[in-house]
Length: 625
Image (tube, rainbow, N blue to C red; front, side, top):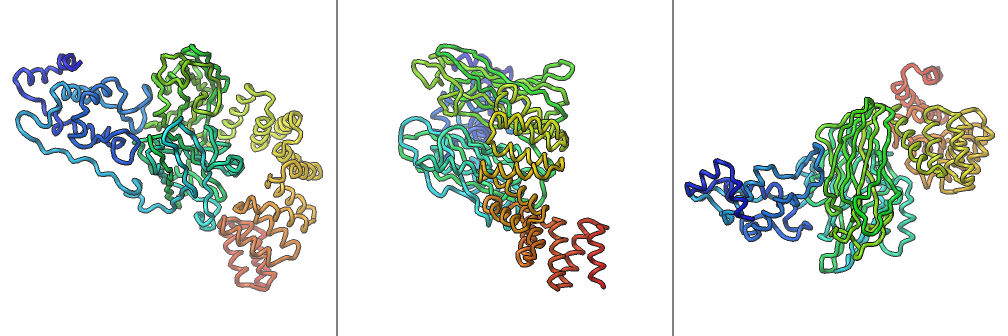
């Protein structure tokens, strides 16, 4: 093998070899060290999951034949996409692979025959946070309250840990904008990690049902990528600072859900990962959205190969694709996605020829990919369930179906997309729900989601029809009752709206939004004490919702509870400083309590938020009398 590599020398290198010289680029000090330090050392160093260190000449020279083999085949450095222009591409250039082959063939020389060269120094990696160099100390560091022990041997584990965020992290705000995210795995047993955000707190219930820390499985339990951002860690992954306006939103009251793929290392390992967050005051102006293509109709018989599943979506409005996250499990073999343009032209978006579950990662395009309305995105995943597949978890093979375990299979392609405006975002969400209904026409929750997005588009007749279909399938689905109640309210049928919100609360007492809507309806009818009760019952679940505090303030003001009204309006303004209604009504409360100067300040601030507002102008005139 080494002799064959010598035959393939470039002409200039052949001349150097024939003259008895050594090409400096094919020596450690002349070129190989720089390649290794850039493309190998970031993973092959202390504290990382790679099985050995590749940093100094001695580290690499003793493994030179193995290094030559793995770079020649493309197995290392790990990089799955074979099509697509992505940031952070770790692949070696052909001339770099060639240099390594010639170095190995020459016996791994340290220096050229002409004499020693200054030897490049190995890279120095920060012992703390990598983003600290550009962003300073993190504004928050969160970690597990209880470590998890990975046994010395046994199967791989996938574990999800719920991290409840301290309210102090939000400093009284309803949300923070996160421009920097970084995860330290805390153990060589961590193969890779994914982080999602759960605003519903439903994952806490999953955690409580599992006897150990967290809960098992690939299913994140309803947690989602925040604003479509992929958060996680893989060996060698470089954390990125979000450009101005691209920060993701972290809402108060949310939980982080940390999914770890854990691999036994030969000794018991306690896993204690840490997550650092950097906040910015620059609001999110470019709102990404998650778009997931998937196929859950997976059944791969034992011995079968090149079994293909697929999904598609016709994009209803212009958007841009910023990043992709392809996913399958052990027996995945290849996958790709294609854009079929409105004129029928096919354009390959990305492809992976040789899938490897152990090296999955998200990939961000160097330049966002524009997708015009009417384009069909097609995704395919192929599986190989033969005994000759070294990644097959079963020997002998057995039928593998869709499921959340790493020994089951999945087929997903998550896209971070930027819809062309708010209307395009709603059109995209509608298209997603309609595509889901093609696969699951009797899924009441999907019908409910469709009804919600139609309501947000003011298409009330269609929304009502979708929600009634959901309730025909599941008459006790609280979310569908709640959404239908909002539709009835928008049509002016307050009695029906109230009845539906009461039914939603009865069906699921934890659906706090139904209590908020019920309180609003009661307040409008003049039942202020009952409205206050409904709002206060919703507060434990929605303590950071400005609308809830504002509505509570209005009910208390109408009921004459001025102290409580003032506190509610002030809390609203802590959460949302530019809330016009809270500012104006706080002025009303202060005026009624005889605190004229404070009331005037509130009215003037409200007028800045809404110049020329007649109610504020009249209130100021009243104070001047």
